[in-house]
Image (cartoon, rainbow, N blue to C red):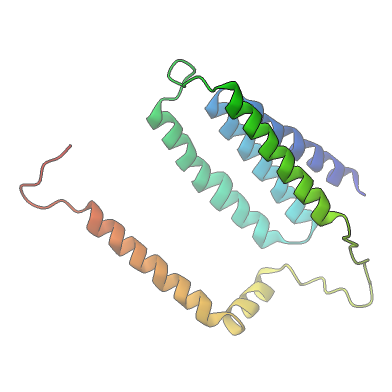
Length: 169
């Protein structure tokens, strides 16, 4: 294991814990951005440059701006947060422990395959290979997804359009 992998793993784990345990929601979002950057570093170590770039642009960029906008729009603080009963906290701990138990049980019998230098393809994560697979094997689902996004955008514009004489709230 390379020292860079260990460093990125350490940063990802610490920042993920910061997301969960931060008292301020804005700090939690900033920790999540740091987690996304460290995961992008892992993608670079795996020779998946396109995935790393998309992760930074889409998640650390656009989605985090949306999260920050919603948090600041809602103006969340400790005074307005309702008190959670002890039963809800116990139920959350039991649910989290159950999820951990299920994940450990599912991963118990996993034996990862080893690295074979003779059959390794170093171009597997490159953009041109991704484009070839996307446009040859998955052309129909790709086009259907683009039509779905187009319909969603048209629907959002139609819902947001105000008619003459309509009240503005």
